[in-house]
Image 1 (cartoon, helix red, strand yellow):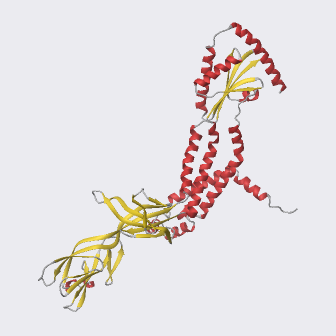
Image 2 (cartoon, rainbow, N blue to C red):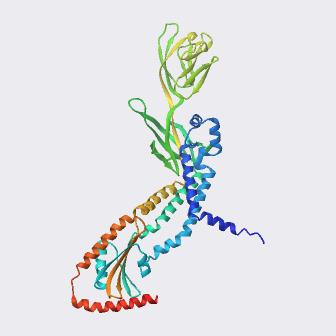
Image 3 (tube, rainbow, N blue to C red):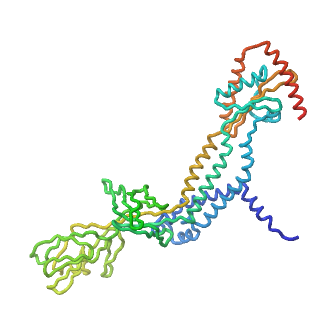
Length: 496
């Protein structure tokens, strides 16, 4: 017998169209999302913080399993694709029955249906028309729509509310598909990075969090940036005045703060940080002649500036270290933070015929401070600052947010909107020739609340029936017609 592979697609379809498969896959997505929440993620966490949080071996393992970038990992995107496939197949298999139930509701009843329905009651009535009229008045008073139905010479009433809740589960399915589709698009085509600008600078190259760089089709320019502090000196707010530059023109401007980004062409620029860039804007000094004779001078300098102190002496600002350390007779920079600053000056003396290395503060054997013709005392220091911008491009966010809104609608229909139905049929006992009004109802959920509605409707119908005035002649006429109807109904049921 030749081996056939035709069963493979059927087996795959049967597996993924199984509701249990979809539930298992959805649970795996939730677990993976939780891992992406508890494990520090590289797109949002600096490398230094990761090395502080995890040991080298642990971090290496997390990187290998792609747990430090879960939402962009191939296995997470594959998982989203599989659960989406399962949702589609499950919905396709079950949707025809749901649509049939929605498009053609069961308005007619027979004795089998009436016998099996849990919520039901029978009220004695004089004749069919009086019973239907009393029931119709009760439904309208309660605000229910009324539909008269004629079936096998058996008139009845049908009323329902919120039939749309039958389709609520498919609205939730559609919302999940939108959210997963948005996540897949973001994982494949989205990116995030960092851009640092100082005042007056424009740049279009961002450093990606995943490594490497990306060039944007437009540039971003910083016109100003700053920090507002509380009374104790702690940061209160960072802000940046930015402009999008395209073809040499400012096409969009905005002052951004934290949680109020600039959005242009699908790219968001968030205010992420603000601080010193380690560069000096202005360095003010008080220069005093070492000989004791001559006047003190207040001078201001920027990096690489040279200022004449007298006819034979000049000073040049050659280096600034925001956080210094001395090791083996050399001055090193530990960081860009303004924690322990040092300034390197070169004093040139034509009279002495040499240059003097001056460091502020003085560093012992490393400096020529005491030998220089001038002594210097810092009076003011203005540092350059940068604004740090988090750059994010998430083309799938429209799907995610649309799915979130749609899910809210779907869940509201599922939990708060109940599909309720009422049937009211005059039935006759052929043995006694007496009529009764059969009232039945059903709800797809929230049975306790429906019980109360059902009881309220029955009580109002009873009240309407009691209000019908007695009419002996009319009763006599309709009793004969009622007996004929009973006989006809009995013959029809027996024939069926």
